[in-house]
Length: 134
Image (tube, rainbow, N blue to C red; front, side, top):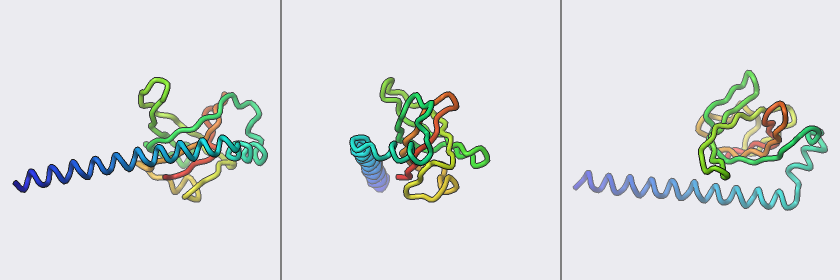
């Protein structure tokens, strides 16, 4: 009887955990759409750091941090590729123009954190514009 109670309680907690993760994802997408509609996120970075030159693709990801490389200013994030519906690992480069929300620097990002990242893809890789820890 006790095991049944523990299993039911564990299932309930897991359902609640995944419901919260889905809600955070939906909220992040809505925020992104609002930012893209006003074009504030990218235009401020382009003015300050002139990152638009040579940029071929602007992107956004929401995922879990799997590694942080402070020495090379990089982090790796696993996220869902919505075109293929497969989980991918993406490496993001952080530079002096990267903005941070809910953290002050790359040093504050920990493995397992859920992050939302606006980035530019170019010949040098994926360069973070904005990193927000959810």
